[in-house]
Amino acid sequence: MKLYNASKNITIADDLHKAVSFLARLKGLLGKSNLRTNEALWIDNCPSIHTFFMKFTIDVVFVDEKLIVRAQYSNVKPWKFVAPVWGAKSVFELAEGTIQKLNIEVGDQLNVGH
Image 1 (cartoon, rainbow, N blue to C red):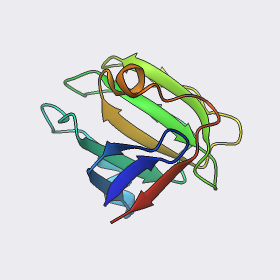
Image 2: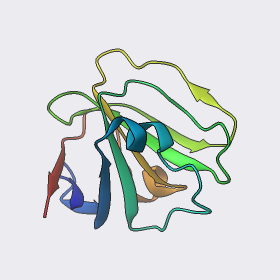
Image 3: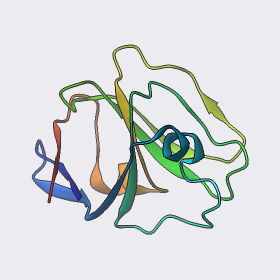
Image 4: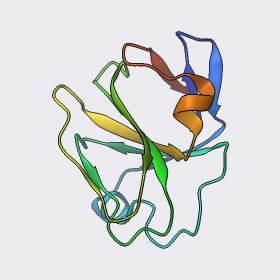
């Protein structure tokens, strides 16, 4: 799958994985040593995240049920907790620096496609 920013007409990630099962959501990016620039993880029904036991820094974008950006956090280091975001339904975990590089902002409309 691919993740697009429809507001800015750009591709955020052309290698988007969705954590669907309970175990996949629980594991998230644990065990990975990095996240490539074009790669992202989508965790549905997830208004907060933690980076306990992770080995690298990530960017995080929280969206509502219509995939509109509600909050974004750059450079979330390992062993951190991001509190629940009001109105967020899911989260996209991105490679470090993606938010700044692609100018992802609150209010942007994201889309998922193939």
